[in-house]
Structure formats: structure tokens, C-alpha cells
Image 1 (tube, rainbow, N blue to C red):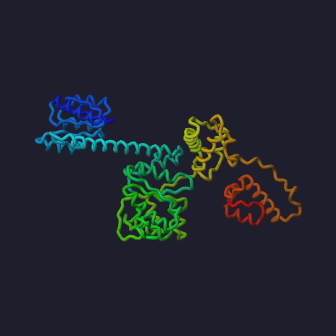
Image 2: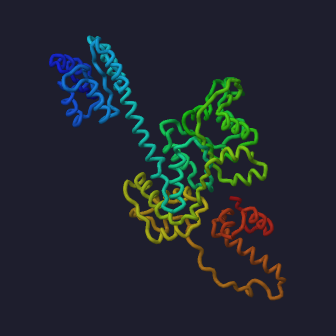
Image 3: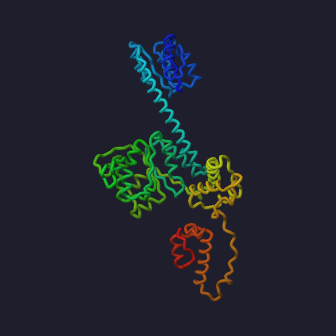
Length: 460
């Protein structure tokens, strides 16, 4: 139930107003003057103040100014006689929600009150949503105490206040979208939309429609006009993930939008102007893509106004313990309703691992460990086998499998074949992981597997 404070120096008027508003379903408090009203406001949870303009000692304007200073979200409606309309207009400029002339009709008053309360509820809803987004996408969700991450946090705070385009680079799984959301949430655009689209997830024709929208009949199945992501992000932030996967034709169109902030929908002729802050991300080296003529140089410079590189997890191992604790807390509460601890032995394995999948891989492993652990303690047996270090290799006894007079090239090939076999076994026959163990590329490993047919068949 909404609570309304009615302020008037006429006792009879207060009685009438209290009866009217109580019957309308509101909780009503009354005050005979401005000072009494302020005293009530300090200990009552008010939703609206309805005050007379002309009162002794503290008039409606003075009360409004003090309430605006103390409670900026609290709506105030001024009740005034015809002769003081000018003062009512002044009150509106100071921040009154509205004014109403005495004598007024009850329906008119109740309608004005409803509008004021709806406005207040919307403000509260937006504030709570903003706080929720801050918790979800602000710095608390980007965990890191390493020097590299602290520098990124500082850069986010500086760049967020500008409209500059940001290019976020880093390996897959390092949290590039979280960085983009943090930039948005720290910016003046935080109360507007954050729109995300993956440029690698859609073919060229669908991606163009996704970005710029389409008119009805623009192509088969285009049965209605649809706004694109740029329009939806107007006034806010657009995050383009894996921007390096855009075709040359789409790169040209994106360049135009960045230069002019205007475009046409697919199948349309009307030029649409937008105000969008762009954050782009890629796990590729765009300079190399430009040199290979796969990415436009002019677009690269448009995107690379501010560059943030997120280091892989293996280069900031001091962040592994706090990241693991963060995910244990998150999934412990979701799955077990309590605190989950990490044993020293399990933590040692986490810190020794190279984390090719970065933070995303760590999060997935921690979620799995929470589900599998007993007594709310994660132990080595709750972690995937690949985290366990390989057993200490025994000295190589070449006499047992290579005859004395074997030519050296043939002997080296035999050793290479055995090492590949061992790497495949240790990786569970996942070729990408086996190649990492061997310190070679996956394509080179696949070449050697063809050379030594039958060693391994998995193409993962």
C-alpha cells in the first residue's frame, strides 16, 4: 500500500483529504505545516507528498526544496489557489511532479496522484535493475588481483565515460563480453540497452539483417519489418563478438555506420540515424588479418580507438585461486545451498594446469567439481583427469625396442611415434590437447598421425 503525506495548515481540509485518500486505498499521514512534514518524512517510508502552497513559517516551495534535497526520488504535488499559479510553475521548475488548483474535482486529484506514484515506481524499478546489473556485470563478476587485471579495471573506468569505440582482444574464454558489459555499466549509457551479437554465429545474409534489420518482403520469410541490433542499441552499447569473422561486404557497411552513424535496413531506402557506442571483440590478431587482406585496414583503425587485451589465464596464475573460490561460492550456493572448500591438493593441481580454455574452462570444471564432491570439499578426484600431472617418465631404454644397427632417421621416427602415442593416451585422444603436450600445432600432429597410421584416430 502506498503512503501519502498530506500537508495543510487547515485542519478541516486535512480531515477531508484523509477520508478521500483512505477510501481510495492509500495509507494517509497528515501534517499541519512544513516543519512537521519534514519530521514525519525522516521516519516514515513515504511514496508521495501532497502539500498546500500557502502555509505559515514554511510554505510549499520551501518544503519542496528541502524534500528534494533529502529525498530526490520522492514525488511532490503542490495544491494551490488560482492566484498563486506563478508560484506553482516555479515549484515545477524546482522539481515538483505536478500542481493542482483548488478547488479541484476528486477524480482529477486521484488521477494526478496515480501518475505520480506510477512515475515513482518506475524510478525504483530502474534503480533496482541497475543495481542488479552492477552486481551481475560490474567488477565483482570480473575477478582478478593480478597486475594485468588491475590495469584493465582502471582502463575500464577511464574509457567508460567516453563514447570511444573499444576493441577487446584475447583468447577464447578470457571473458571479453564481461569486459564489454562492465564498460557499458560504468558509462553514462548504463540505463540504456546493452545489445550483443556474435558475428561468427550467422552467415553473411542473416548477420546483415541481424545488425541492420529488414523491411517487409526484403527476402523470403521476411513477413514483417524487423529492427536490427543497431536500432535496438540506440542510445546504448552494441557488442560485436568475433568481429574478425565478418565478410568484406559487411565490413564496408560496418565502417559506414561507424563513420556516419546511419544505415538502411535490408530491402529499405530510408536512412536511419542512431547513437550507439560500439565495443568489438576478437580472439584473432587483427593486424595479421589486415596484412593477410582478410580484414579492412580502415575498419581496423576505426575499431582500435581504445585497445584492451585480456591476458590468458596461464599468464596470470595468481588469479586462479580467487577465481576458483569465486566459482565455488557461486555454484555451491546454487547446487548445495552452502559453502564449498577446495582442498590444498586440488588447488595445487589447478595452479599447475595450463588452462587452454581460460576462465570459461575453469568455471566449467568448478561447476562439475561442486556436483561431484562429497562433504562440500573439492578433492583431486573431483577434478578431470587431464589436470593430473603426467607420471614421472622412466629413463628411455632404447636397447629394448631399437636394434643396435638401426639407422638414426628410422630410430628417431620410432621415438616420435611412441611420444605421440603417449600424448594421445594422456589427453584422452583429444588431438588439440595432445598437440599442446608435445609443443606442436594440431595440424602438424594430424600430419604425423597420417604418417604413422593407426597411432590415433580421434579428430577432436
